[in-house]
Length: 334
Image (spheres, rainbow, N blue to C red):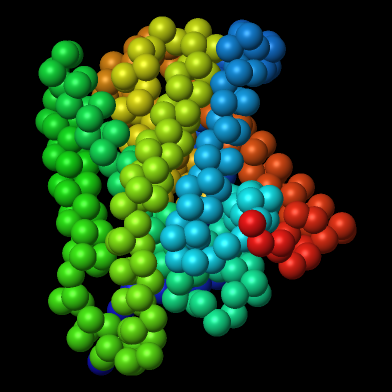
């Protein structure tokens, strides 16, 4: 008997990829259609004294992410120039935004690392995995904290309480898994069977190296929190720029949900899904009631800022191809 098509396999197939592109375009088109462009005079309807700082602040999140990864690389003994790490992170962001697969940018970063350190594949992969998990952990923690504060102040329905429970449980599982991977050895026999003794030993050494750097992990965790706070404040300023009287706490909840939704592998780079989730959670929170046009404009502006900074990553990639800087030449070690 033939087995059914697995969802993951379908999403990676040409038909699944086409469907993901279609979903992203459809949601973005729906949001653009809901904006009263005549009323707002196009993007001239934005308050640029708020919109421009919001866009610039959003761009600050990417160098902070690169700094976090730089710390994790050093914890693995992979010493690379700061400009190289920054450049590779920008290029990875470009790939993440425009190619299928939520880890396209991580694959690009791994490829650049492999070129620099071909004998340290496990350490390179561990730095990327830790970078991803720290970012996700900080997002879940901030989402749970913001949701808890919102519910204690304003109350909320079952949907918001379910989101709080899911965020808290997911953060707890992630924290327990990270502690277990770096501080215990129960997983080693399983890794030996799956990877072989040599690779399992390399992964164990990478986990131990990371788990023993408490100060580095603490600073990386603080940077992860800073990355998301910068993003949340940026979105709040953007909301104010379109005329929405939304509080920072409510926008933090909406933004956190939007970024979690963007991680689902059902679209291209989270486009459309991220903005649709933002609109949906804002409705649950009662933000922008009676201002559907402004909410839709916020979602479109949110998408435009994200794409703009991703295109900057494409410019860095093109620069490296043409001039071999900052990542087209062997990295000078710090």
